[in-house]
Image (cartoon, rainbow, N blue to C red; front, side, top):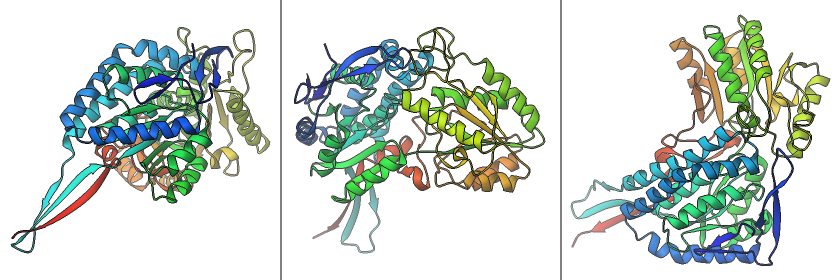
Length: 479
């Protein structure tokens, strides 16, 4: 039986009974079949969310927190099964999938409590016969769109914050990784969320997005994806002045200063780079290393990279799974070919993996490149794959300039011991997230988002729930 859509508290097929097959990136085999909806399903979901919003916004923050905490408990209880489905449709190693799934529960737990801290305020008046109040109220129905690379975590960030704020949600995960999202929605259903409060759509991006951004009931769009698509959605949202939160592309620099422990710094760099096969908007993509330690650091990075075990994410001891699909393989090959044509040297990897264990899937060797120049594509464009380019620098000023020389501004990393250098560099970097001696910086209680063309708004922390609230000012004249 195909996985279904979830609309107004019911599991159901799409409008025309269409389905799509979901392949396993490691084997090419079909994991499951998914119902595939369209415009009329989207309208029904929006209308259900609009009806449910009336009662959901009237719940107290404590009542909403009970639902969120029940959902978190169920996600934790079912995490092992959900994680296996994540690996089956996405390809990442099971340990990474399990951490991602448990992270979903953490987002619900955090916002269950943060919803209780949505405070208004009383503003002093300059007139004795007036009183001024500021209230914060839920924005309304939210359209939440999430990508394939972290299929449950990036969806749950939006769901948890929106629901805690008192909004209802129509969500559309990637149609290429919808199965794990359905399991999250089973948890929400079993937690007792009222019909229409949460809705799950899978289907044509263009059909569904057109409805979501033209329907008057949808007051907010929360999107994670590419900068190009984000710009298109922002233009569409402008037609109705629909509020948007956009978490878009990144091109993260990692700066390694000469006072680091080289072994530790190399391990952090390799771990941060090849997590999820480098298919992450916050993965380090430009590694700037001080020339004093460049040769030693390069040697250790190459050695560590060459030792990574690539294979089916469900197998024991695998460090990196397959890339997501053939397009990701071709994209990685194109970046490497461009770099080599311009003088880059392949220090490790550099090609698709072949052989009995790899031929049916989309496997690529973790790759380290040297002799990098600024005219190469990989120094200019977002590299969404397992390529680690090493670039020497001589001065702090040079490193900062080269790190900031991009239209992106999502995440940046600094590995350094000297506190003065750490403060100067982190203050100078034009990025929304800075990992100082930390290449896995994301937590629910801190804001996640970018500067420049990496997006608008934040997910996580106090800022994350503010994205789903409207501000109302009341001035009262006393009789």
